Length: 460
Image 1 (cartoon, rainbow, N blue to C red):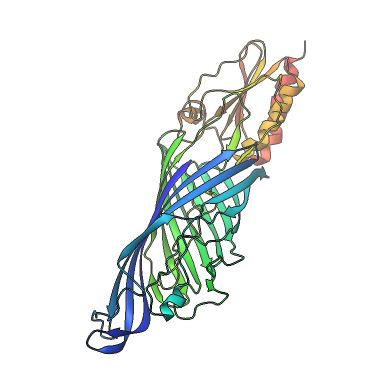
Image 2: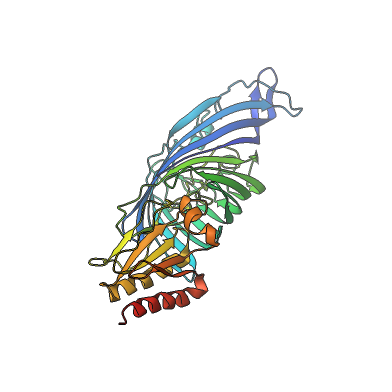
């Protein structure tokens, strides 16, 4: 479960002709400032080892302020103020997003694919252009799209030691207009990030993201004098996170636009800031483990891919983030599904410095793993296959180290300079006979070494 708050400050200008008090019709500039914020509650639920479902519910608030300036930059008073813009706050529910996801690992690469729909619960306004033509007060700010929109996203990442590199693509397509004639623009985003885990539960990350949005339409036509007429942003981002416990983490990130192309009015957006809290709830400790994407602190690409329009009059931020990374809507698991009759169990909770107690009379394999370790996912089925082949004399005990700075790592891996995946194997009398780490290219050798211990134990 993730609770995230996003916010930014936007200044936008566009030219117009209005009736000014005491001066008649003048060429003026609409100078508008907006404080845009959004709070999102996202819940991800693992259904099977490789499939999950996600729900994201946004609540939006947009505070606007307006000044009217003449050609010299002096502020003027309109004869009919408040028709186009007002000092006000617009707030309410946005469009929730419902997603399904599937994930896995191939050759050390973790992948996740997501797909779903947005639910049209966010408020949309009546045609502001028609109202403006009649001289009536109107509103360009939209809290939703008013339509059911397909959403597709994909993520790919690879971890080595405390590092992880990843990339993503995301799109939300708006394929029809709502009952008021409004058809929001399509949203696109893609990016990459690099993450480094530090000591004491901290991690830092950085990356780049490209966001784009096509023009909105009203009754099939793209507006030519106002509203969202398309934009593109290239943003650089940096973030930090802190794992308060294996179940709870806090995250902060900032994205800064370095290239912005807007069709229409001028726009200045200094940065987008995000503050989030993530809470994970695990299943029964004897259940086959589910491996989530390593964003125990990672949503470098779950930040909303929404954009305001060129004039600051669109549904700023309505392009809701996917998932939830990296980041994070899907659990994907590994290992054979049916463990009935096998001596396989998890030791302690994530990151705990558990005692390693060999099973009397059996070869005991202690498998150290983490959710972000793709080779660990490849290793586990081979270890379970050994248990299945020799159920009477082999036991498997799994230790989720959770993070490089966890008590489990400090106790069992750091003293020997070990990496993941890592195994310790004791014989039937409880003596340590094998201890070894392996990378993605040496898993077969590790499995062969463990198999040799098992076979030796079966000889007279």
